Length: 629
Image 1 (tube, one colour):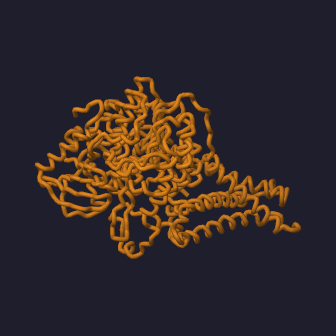
Image 2 (spheres, rainbow, N blue to C red; image 1 turned 120 degrees about the vertical axis):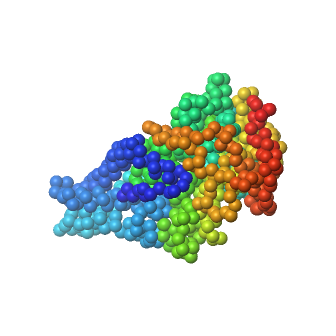
Image 3 (cartoon, one colour; image 1 turned 90 degrees about the vertical axis):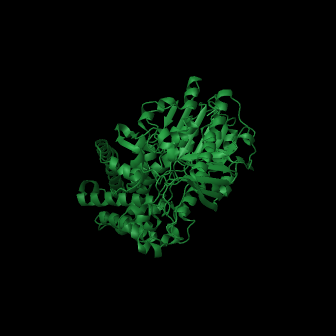
């Protein structure tokens, strides 16, 4: 049952991971994963499936069966138990069947009925010779079959039940000063959704990330050098692993004896392995690139995936993870700290919708599972896909459904924090690191969500709600002026330094929200007639290393100051966003948005581009500890 698509893409992180898994460390990790975790789980699951049948058959049908069973019966009943367990998992997450060759092409209901029949049929074959000649033998076999299905169902649900349990701790006596909760890739337009409006606090209409990349954004929030952390990639540089990069807020907090704790359900997203000494505690399911196995490959082995949140020290992001599990653990393990941070990647692409989530799609059971699989780039689309596109395949719809699921699970927990002695006096923040863009291949067909390729309102605008002591128990509207997540960094620095909780109405300290980011080539998602001063991964990276225990690192060709020579920039004033993308022949393309609507576009010369660049970079680089820059 372990189907792995070993083909890599020709762009992005997927190709890097595929290549990395062919290394010595990757092969060693894969060998250990299969033979130390996956295979034992399946062997034990099959054995328990047979033992359940043996016990039920012996007690109900034939007491001599335990001494007369055959290997064929054992195999059939073990296999029946495993198929039934998987049927339950696929019943809970039907879209997870798109990874199964052949079955993924059938309507979901047909696939589920086929698997149901297979499980029951295998169990019946394993039991057919038991109790023959006895009165009511057929009825007794049916009773044994029902007992087996119940026992196997309990085995399937056990890890999911264990993962949902909470372990409340008593108040620590050391109240938290700041709590940051982040949902990866939550777009700014979710601020208007009822699920987001249910979060008590002050909501801001115009909030912008300074760049659309998770790892770099968090390093900026921790006081990292803005020049270094706006021109990079998802993989940390060798300077970060060797401790040459200063994260000022973390170092200052450490010097004051303050505790900063960081939790994440996909550690490969931010990749701080090797720098955890800057925190009082860092908790993640696995280190570095190993998280991609938990999050992405786990769907191919459902029994293993269901146990992942028990086997790991922190819940991960496989399709069977409870959306509130990581938040519960964060709040309990964060007690006694000064600054608690949790970043969740439950909305990462691709999204495997659960049966409950599929309820928002009319007639989902008639649609093959593979029609829910998004296209990641234009090259994957064939002519038949342009005419066979059903509404269910729209990845933006799946994304909206998933974000709403997370918000519904988190809202009651967030609103109870005002009564929690450890969190009620904290500066509480719910936001995102960046938005998500869904490029159109045609008017009706959208590609899967991406970010980190450029500056635009879809990737830069994020929602934000802030709750402080005495905050209203419902959501209220904040100021309309543009607010940058860099402002959150600055007020957090002041809070940790002085202990004074900032006024939610006065978070914005800049005349506009700046953004600065490298321009990556995005020809996999759209076609353009213009030639920009763009980067390719090969153009800025000298070498990539995959290291033991899930670590990885990159060595860049040039320092950040030189890599940023052709950087793109953006300036946001309220809901008006101006984006400057440098052109290969000089000057820049200037694009203006009102909300998410394009309102103007044209080219400016190099002199005007450099003038605007200087204005934007002045605000981007400005920090409370270095205001002159």
